[in-house]
Image 1 (tube, helix red, strand yellow):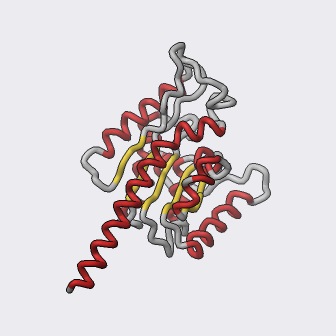
Image 2 (cartoon, one colour; image 1 turned 135 degrees about the horizontal axis):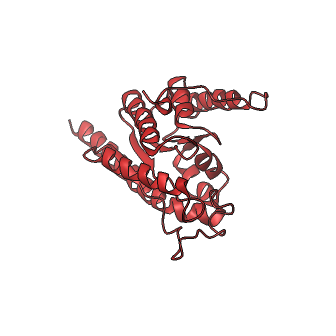
Image 3 (cartoon, helix red, strand yellow; image 1 turned 45 degrees about the vertical axis):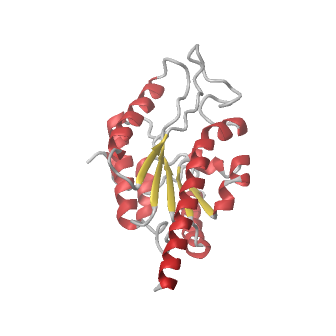
Length: 229
C-alpha cells in the first residue's frame, strides 16, 4: 500500500505540539458542536475559515473547520481514524487534501484520497461526501500543476456512479490565456486570496445550499408522513 494511504500522525517540526493540539481541539469541537457540515483537509480548508465566504455563507451552515496547513493525505487519514469523526452525525463532509503530498505521484495521491473517502463512507454513511479538486499552481510548466490535473482526472473516475459522493471543480478559471495565474487570485501562485476564495468556493456554496435544502425537505416530508400515520 502506498505511504499516502497509510495513516500517519502529523510531524512536529518546531517541537511545540501544535498539530496535536489542533487535532484534540477538533475532537472537542466535533463532540460539543453537533455540526451539520464538517470541512476536513489541509491549508486550503484551514485558511478558508479566514475568508469572507466562510463568514457570509459556510459558518451559517453550522460548519466546523478541521483543516491543518501542511497536512498530507496520510495525516488527514490518521486524524479521522483517531477521533475527529466520533460522536458526530454531519449531513455533509467536505474534503480537500493532496496538495501537500510533495514527492508523491498522482496515482499515489489518488490512492491516499480514496482511502480517506472509504473511511469516511464507512464511519459516516449518512453524510454526503463532497471532494474538492486540486487547484492549479505555479507556472504553466510546473510539474505540480500537471500532477494535480492527473489527480483530478483520477478522482473524476473514482466518483462515477456514486450518488452519495460528488467531486466539485473549484478551478473556476484561475489559469489565464497565457497559462499564468493572477496574483490577485493566488498571491504566491498557490495560496488563495480573499478574491480567490470567493471565486473557488462559490460552486461549493451553491452545492451545499442545495443539498441542505433538499435534506431539510426530506426531513419535513418524513415528519409529515409520520404525523399522518
